[in-house]
Image (tube, rainbow, N blue to C red):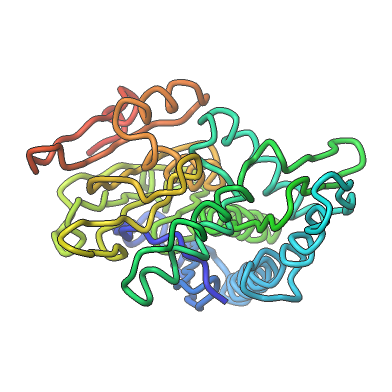
Length: 343
């Protein structure tokens, strides 16, 4: 299966343990899940314990890959999408579906970001992402009728969650959920927790541009992470030091469509159904990678002013955004807290 949130990868600079802490050795493992390389890096004093933690972390990521995929027709997410309101009778009541704790957590967090961003982030975007995936594949724009039909099936207020019963209902016909803008961050958070349950706290989990960090490497104040520039082929010149939080970058440098000289980003505005205009790369630091992942997508849709306003709404969230203005000049905006974390 694949998740379609394309990002500009973050560069991690991994220091070796200092001499006074040589008892802690560095261990790592990489596997492909959710169509990206997941890397788990940790520091431990015992090799057997480290290998056990790495195995449990990857097993947890694989479990979430199967559960949260919108490509796997047998996944829990796909089965939920199949219960949307009766296509022949839009007035019919949708089925209330009991959710696993994993899917409940992801959808609950997603709805919070949807409300905070006024719909700039929306996991009900599935009909639109499917349409624009086809457009990029065939290099042709969607027909107006198909676009209107997809837009009619999108809207986070029509995903109803019951916090007491932990159930979900999809109130519109043809609704489809797409967790591409949040699942990798959630999986990274869960992998960090899996490692922590093994008694290891110095850990970092990277899913391309989505990172969850635990305690820092031995002798360091934090994990040093390079911020992706607007051009992903350039070397990062900006770095932050992070620990016990998440960081995520969302950008469209590598996935976009050009037709008749017009550039169409892979990032879709759920409210209009159209790709966002202009080029940008957004990096968010937040208490959890789940939140950072979703906020980075929302910020890409909102643009610089809206992105800064959104970051101010969310406790603990910091923003850095580089973008091209109407004249093609690169500009940056950042929150005060992000500047304090920079090195």
